Image (cartoon, rainbow, N blue to C red; front, side, top):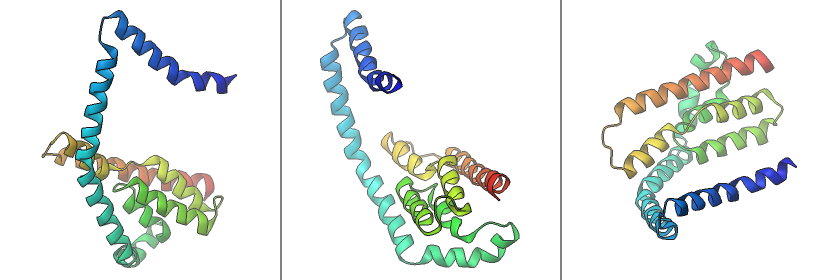
Length: 174
């Protein structure tokens, strides 16, 4: 029963919007076509931002700079009982969802989904956001140049999510 209801939600929502638009005498088809045009032009304008972000992340990981940075941090990480294997995920998550998903997948494949690191990676993946990606894409799309406060708040929220993931996983699985 629940499957049938969930399969019908989107079509019913679309139908209700079309019926409401028709009731208000809005040219619904023309509005849909105009929205489609705006969506395509928005997607095209986002491509340079996305390409730049993905290329820079790939270079950072492939060059070994990420691994060298993690190795440098190991003494500090051991004081706070932070597993060094989770640092690449914590660093890539605010930058790119795709890159962080790749790191999380590597952790889960190497350590196992039921391992502490697998659970921590999954929790961290769900507790943080792709702050730099969101700012780059959405602020770039609407041409907002000053994003300093949004960046600070977003990165602080990511830090809180990472910290909360560590605390919760140590309390529940530790």
